[in-house]
Length: 327
Image: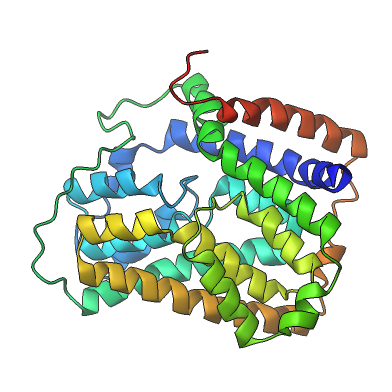
């Protein structure tokens, strides 16, 4: 179990560390005010921009809520806000790098496309179905800098390696440990023998993913373990979409922030797009004759992976400290 857990950490560490760097650079050069001013008008282009802007941001399904609340208060339309809420937690620069490192370029790119498309679909549905009268509170406070002051490079790196690492650290470490345990304890092809393939397995993964709170990066090693146990890449993708994008707290907040109808659109869009994306990915994998588990970065020396894993642990372990405790 320890060996498998360490192997997962070594495989993902270089890419997650690079993701933290890229997230810090984005924090430095892309302000919340810049994002907000492009999302205020109705229409498909605003929805598309909201989804495009949300895809690379390193925010989980709970972390995105205060940002979305701020966008809404500063004039973002309801469809654009929903589009942002759907696309943002599914992926980010950090999770893209981890997905690339563990599952290969096909799944990594397809995951980004699925997040983008599902965000656009949700926003367009919100355009077609206006909200009922809603007077709910929008009291969630934003954690973004809205005063127009651009963070320095050092502040950006602090965000990537301290703030972001603290936010996702527990979920990431848990995901690594779960992946190691599942790989070591559950026989290969276990799920394939028990569940088979196709829509039934994808629906089971959807039911598993929707109520859970798992970040987009932390879900990747778990998905890798599922694939090793016989799940198709498409079924794993259903988990990768539904797990990070939804949880009970997120659903309740969307209801409160926007409306009951908005919450229903949000949930249905994620469920349908997750199932459709999983089916399309499986067809693509078959047509390309690609083996996800055969993917490995042979050009990366073992020592670099191991050093990166040690650095990653140093970065993530402080997230285990109780939040109220001073350093």
